[in-house]
Image (cartoon, rainbow, N blue to C red):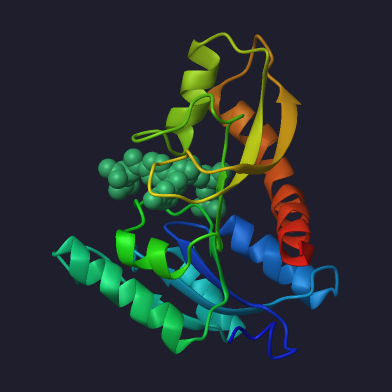
Length: 202
Ligand SMILES: Nc1nc2c(c(=O)[nH]1)N[C@@H](CN(C=O)c1ccc(C(=O)N[C@@H](CCC(=O)O)C(=O)O)cc1)CN2
Ligand SMILES: NCC(=O)N[C@@H]1O[C@H](COP(=O)([O-])[O-])[C@@H](O)[C@H]1O
């Protein structure tokens, strides 16, 4: 029985590889009463990630779970699942997580995993498309518009149903850094809005 079914707030878990900017925006919205949910845990595949340091400072359960610690992908998948279940996570939020989620986590959290991708999916997504590679591809394709997409996570990378999108112009003079900054400025509010709608859906 989920925390929500027990009348409590939905418990949020995060996976992040670097800054965890989405997780931070969501936690801030929860603290401000703008989102009815409870951030409880964060795991990272990168022991030096600032997201992990932030989670520890915030008093969230924090874990370094990587292929360095679990070379067998099935063992890493099992370890991520065990961590989330120990913390009684109801909804899993990917926040700049650069690893493909395994079948055990996907099965246990089917329909309850959200991700944010820095393009207008289905454009410029898929295996190998993450971080600045995405913005470089958008500029190289001569796109006049870009943005970010929050989607449900399925086995196929960036193939899950789209929940919400933000849109920004791409300028002829744009660098990867410039476009990244314009897209990232929309990601926090977009993720909070998408998660609020997801959690309030019947
Ligand atoms: N099963 C799924 N797992 C994940 C999804 C998903 O849709 N289904 N989304 C990604 C996030 N993501 C795009 O939004 C993404 C992340 C990573 C990659 C990728 O190719 N990663 C490389 C490794 C990169 C590294 O180690 O830094 C790889 O796996 O070879 C593509 C898209 C999160 N997981
Ligand atoms: N494919 C996933 C992906 O590319 N995610 C993107 O990585 C950045 C992470 O920044 P952060 O580490 O500062 O949160 C974010 O812009 C997010 O959209």
